[in-house]
Amino acid sequence: MTPFDKFNISSVSKKLNTINVKISAANDKPFLCLNLLSNYQFTKRFVKILPNGDVQGGYTRMITSLIDFSFVRSFTASCYSIKSPPAYDPVSLFLLELFRYIDQHQNMNSFLKVLRDKDRGRAYRRYAGLCEDRIPSRGTFSNFRIRLGAALYNKIFHGLVDIFRQLQMITFNILAHDGTLFPTRARYKGCTWFSDKCSCIDVHDIVFRVKRQIIYRLNNLNKINLDKAFRIKCECPFVPEGKAMKNTPKVEVLSMKLGFIDGKQSENQINTAMLFGVKKELDKQGIFINVIRSNLLEINPCEGHAKFRCPKIPKDTDARIGVRRDPQNANRKQKIFGYNLVLSTSVELDLKLELPVAATNIAGNAEEGKKIITNKKQIKAHHDCQTKIDIADAKYDTIENYTFLRKNGSTPIIDFNPRNEKLTSEALRDRGYDQNGWPFAPCGILTKPNGFDSKHQRHTFCCFKQCLDLKAVGIKNIQKDYDIGSCPHIKNCNGFSKHTYIKDNPRLINEIPRGTKRFKIIQRYRSASERANSTIKEDLKIIDKPIVYNKERADILAQIAVIALLLKRAFAFIVKISMLFANYQASMDPAIATQLQPHYVPQSILSLIQRE
Figure 1 (cartoon, rainbow, N blue to C red):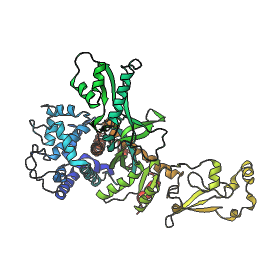
Figure 2 (cartoon, one colour):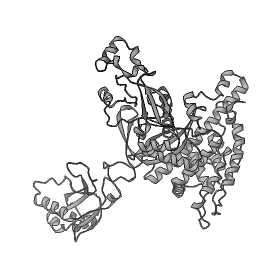
Figure 3 (spheres, rainbow, N blue to C red):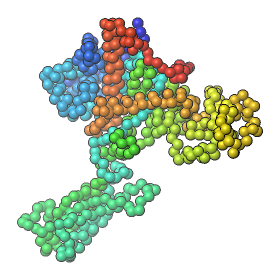
Figure 4 (cartoon, one colour):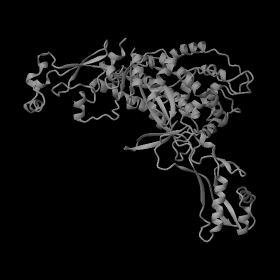
């Protein structure tokens, strides 16, 4: 019996029997829509793990054989009514969507082709409770996602997180936070401050300006190249206040050119000439108007007013440009037009397991640093837990985050963002402490940490009489600005000492001093959230190049992505442990026995995790 025995598939299966019963009893809201086109029923199936580590029937069989997803029907009951038309069981559609991403079917049409196939889709249909002659269409899945919305998907996600918490695979002790940019399907057209207002812009003199351009060309036919198009533009009325620009940008309303009539004019050409009041002038010269592009929505030829849609507004008006380092060249920045998925990952050091526990999706240019609080509140709303350490990069280095985390009993390990601070040696000496917040002694020697007073929230730094160990050259350099012989602190046991309070500089001064070995050990676990984001994007390819055209769809896809990641990683861990047990029982190899022991966790981290 080893500590990892509880993660063997036989032990997990027994525990899930009890957990499934508890979840079913807790979520018994009646589903009023009785006329269903499919019917999911949980069936316990034997799960066989093959010698090469694969699962017979794949992860879809393993997941649906161990977890009862009937709670999804209870969660989504409010989206249906007794008067609803015949509908698919929401559990069926949810599972089919999950199967698609777990088995990496990037295209919905190709997945539906497999689902309709008599042989290849048989397992999917059986697990989801579908009949062969009632296969949902692509539109059914699209409408289902919108019907549920991101909030319900997030609720389902946290329901699954709670299952793995009961299996002791998630503790919430250490959380790593990070975001990843992913693109929208819409094309960026060059404007950074577009909004919904840009879809209908008023312009007052459009008819007069077009007529003036045409008359000018008719009067100067010998000078004008008729093959060259001319464009009618207007100034952008929605430039943000305080935007420093030499010239107000202009947007195109119309693009057209003139041409000689060769045969009979079309009805559109005649109506265009009449609309701008130049038909007589054009007929005299035998010329017509050829409209190349038009962004007009409506026009009043009597008053000359018109409304048009800005050509620079993309199809997705929720997406924004975010900036990241180019994966191919770290010295270059890459712009992504889309969204930012901010993921919080629970880092289980003793299991070497990293599972997502919260996710928030925002526009690409939104302030990612504020979403650590959003994710923490999301976790608190669904789980009764206490996080001991929160790890994040410099984007999250704000006083609000430090205050919130400390108030909730967590130790923040966040990379410091120096912003506009001067970090030259002279500037650091003048302000009295270095880039890690360690004070300088009066002689200029950098002091060292000597303990943290949790009651008063302060660190003690001492010089430890380092001057006595200096060589002649070092003493000579210090002696230029300070008389070591008359130093009043030389009599003290630890020499010069100073207290630094967290409240004086809450971003720089940390419970664990920056720059120490302990801080760096904890800091390196931040890569857990980066690996989770990378798995969603590069391995599962859910947000690699998704087909989303608005934030509502992007939010839903983000929640589906973390659900797929959670299940895939958790069950892959169960398979791994089960394989180790099987191999150990067959060979009794001591090396395998070592792998079935909890992984080493540094004492410096254990002391933080185990504190009350």
